[in-house]
Image 1 (cartoon, rainbow, N blue to C red):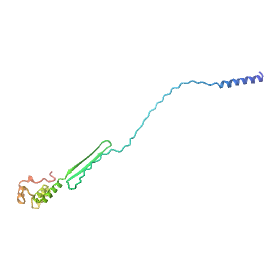
Image 2 (cartoon, rainbow, N blue to C red):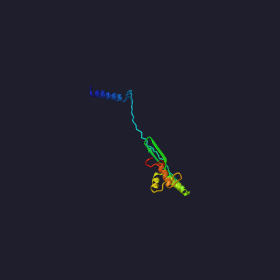
Image 3 (spheres, one colour):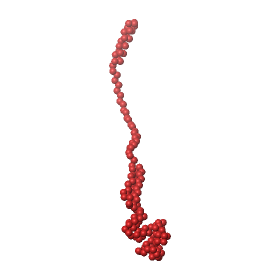
Image 4 (cartoon, rainbow, N blue to C red):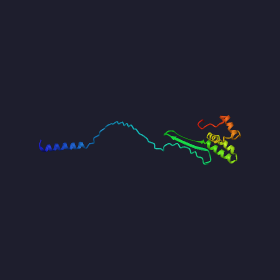
Length: 158
């Protein structure tokens, strides 16, 4: 083959190659995919702390013989509060005695005070025994000596 024929054959081959490359290439494929996800989450709730509030136990009038007290306790789950009053019996005795004295009933006022063992002992030590059954002085002392069970109990004995 001569050179001309070779160049012509080569040119035709290149044209055929060029023409073959312009045809579209079709590819068919099938794919299967599976996705799996695991999630771990934590939620934090911000809220005010629980509170137990102790009740206010006050006495507006200072001329009473009652004392108030209250308290409270709180945990994260459970809370409790309470309040109450306490009667001061010695305060009551002093007020009653003062009222009796102001009404002119001096012996009754002393008798009311003598219900306290400390006052009773002080009166006996002073030589002026507490009144009993309307009797005063030596007659009252004789009654107290005859019946010691009537003597008021000591604070320690109660």
